[in-house]
Length: 520
Ligand code: NAP
Image 1 (cartoon, rainbow, N blue to C red):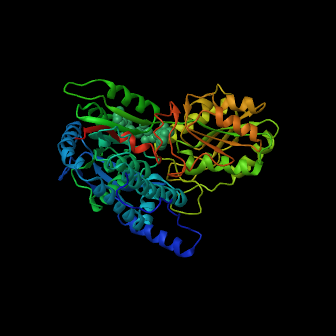
Image 2 (image 1 turned 120 degrees about the vertical axis):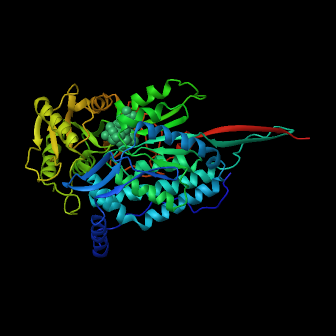
Image 3 (image 1 turned 90 degrees about the vertical axis):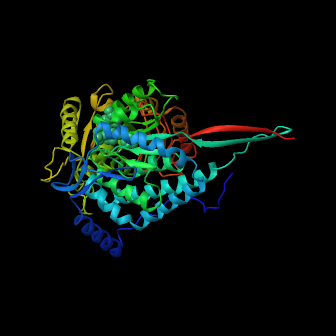
């Protein structure tokens, strides 16, 4: 039963940077944020600010000499304290009326909207997002806040159930307890915010352990939550290394659930640790784990080749291929294979690569030196496994740059066909026919996103039925899921299919209680 009347959810409109006034405003935001780079950020547990002196220093991947933020790192002892503090505040927070929490979340959305360009600038500096990618992310963040506020409004109060004669029957949704939220760096604001506000608006307390690559964006978001009225006790931003504090947070007997988004290996480890009962623990921990992808786009023999090239290019190289939804395998019908490849290689060769604060650049840097090394390793392997048709071009100095790389004629057994690379590397594989293309696309342990370019309704029907991914798209890119329209989450080793931004999502943070009262 909805308890407040809210306007219908609408996706946030993107700022149009082709307008000179918007471009100027974005440049101003970059200047403002540049003046704030290099600041120090303390930890806060409950109302207490803490300095550990052990610093996590985040740098600008476009220009590694530039420090973005210096953050005091949590110790395992502080991680334990954070869970205990969140546990002691839970009784109070869980009794805060749902309508108040909804209101706070709508206020957070309004603050983000006001500070949109500033947040874009932080993402440009700390995560290497281009202007357009940053803008899409802040819009998605606002969408998560607006959408989950409406969802909580729907789930607040008694839910409709059958009324037995002589009884008053109710079902209510209750929060779970202390949640540990562990996001990745690649959507350093949207995923962190989405998982955090879903935990909070449903009445759970949360400990948010941000990625070590993007702690400043997380600190800025924590400011927004406080400003919106979320109490200090309700959430803790616990900056620190996952390998040092992660196990303590996951294993603590007072942790009730873990909401994780990241790589398969870390997700599987969390799932295993959370499953083990700890002394004093009185529940089975819930784990929401959204993990990697090896996403494929099928280009059918009758596809519009130019549109397919456009869709694959954007899906493979947008944000340097560092999206879980990025296309890393193009599976192309042999009838158009050569034409497609030649057009795609030409387009990739023309991509402008450089610092992401310059809007002329279509691609910025990858996130870190270790990511760069790992991706270069895959490119070296790929050159043995296929034919390099784009890449190997000179890159700008001073940042972690990798050119858009395309390797053709890749066999399905190749490492670059099977393993998640998480960089601007695309494997292209020839398919004999549509059936062959479908079986190649499904030849993966992952099942996150996929797309099909085809004009054949029967082929699209087959893909709808058998292309085994959580998010499937026809005749468009396989990235850019929109909150509300494309609930997001994958199958198999891509995770628990939580469908973020959809109507099922908040239920993962709640438990239902049935109350039946005899009348008379
Ligand atoms: P990651 O290395 O798995 O790290 C994710 C988070 O886990 C980080 O906050 C990390 O902290 C933390 N962590 C590391 N070790 C931990 C441990 N032992 N216990 C608890 N937490 C630990 O992934 P990433 O490189 O940040 O992100 C890229 C991956 O995320 C890719 O595989 C991508 O496909 C996936 N992803 C999936 C989705 C989806 O919706 N399915 C969306 C986005 C990204 P530190 O940074 O301190 O190590």
